Length: 178
Image (cartoon, rainbow, N blue to C red; front, side, top):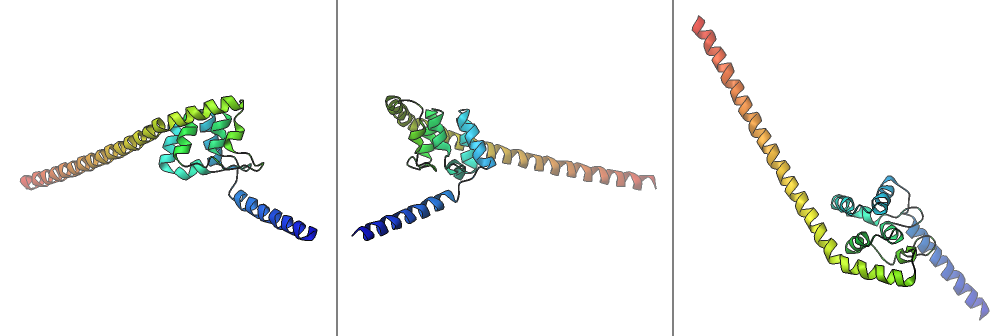
């Protein structure tokens, strides 16, 4: 009986180690994780939204210690950013290399954490709307850029037509002199 229990515990330990190793395989300190950390640390929600617009996967990156954007939002007590990250499906139950979750990173008391979580939940709809506006603004800017490019192409075509007209005038002038 004791041998079976020891064998079972060893099997569980090996399985847990394998799961931990596979989870850690994608964890790394990179320029992208540093950029995400800086935006969260400085409470730069608008910039974080623009980043997510370009590549939402950046919000899910984890640094070498297993922490990522939501961990930092809790650590630096950034409720709007935490709400945005939760709206973007960043995993609130993820654990770092020490087995801590984002909520474990909150520096305050349990009561303060509950208040923070209530604020985060209350902000989720607001930040979702803000992100929709970022998407709309980006699309409008893209449309404006396309219109400007079309106008520039039209202006270039007009310039070419004028150049051709001038060349024809020059040719006509040359024939008149003969």
